[in-house]
Image (tube, rainbow, N blue to C red; front, top):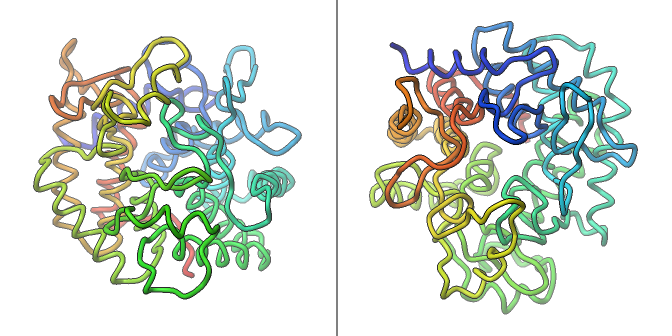
Length: 397
């Protein structure tokens, strides 16, 4: 059996008239249409030959765009039966705005269908406008509240790189698609701010840092990968897999910086011959930041060391990384990671089908969380599609 078949089979099972559900298991909210999960699953679907799956992305986009708040932000998820939208629990999700726009314009570009993208033009404007408002100071970086993106029970808040990169991608896609040079210029400006402030190498650029705090906060910060983010109190020390995968995919920085990052990734895969953690190193009870994890959960605590966001292994972000490694000319490393994806996604303690678990323990590699997650299958499909030469739309900069 081809490794693609179980992934595509799961996406077909998760396809509904309203869009992709997060899992085919009837667990809590996983039967809802999620902006982030649905778009990521749909982006992987676009790189297959299955037109029905592309249509399900279209349905996903219609569902989430119809539920866009009048202020411009997008729902966390939508109940397909009642059409009731949730915009987050304690906090809304900043990254959903960019994911919705990215999904919309990738769909238009790859399928050639312009109907939905043209109809949603006012909503794209509102979405990009609310992101600009969330800068709060007009200095080109969105401020992300704690629990404000995919890692909604983790510690990060402030100027989180992952969210900035998604915004750049959304601006570049919208600027090209709708022929709005001001959005392209904004994206170019944000890129300059990111390179100056998120790569810890003061010799590379004489431009001022984002804030005086960074002068002393970056002294002990890592120098081999893009920084996870910073806020008025700290620069985060953890490696952020999603952010660094996106940085490679979007060609952020110089060739030397990319080479340094790839060398770091190669070393990590040598020492950890499996999937890479979403955030590393894992926080332990002796870490000061662990206190911020302890009560940040809705139903049960899941962030024990090496689990869930706290050092857990997520197929979705490893799939994005494999795709990015193909894009920057590292097929050997990408294929190695894809092999680990296959091994992880096949695990299923309760059945014979591929399990496609949400995440895995960072040390034991045991499956954790919900099974049959569509975006775990999507990560594998993205990796395989990029190995075959298929690509999402990343406009030249």
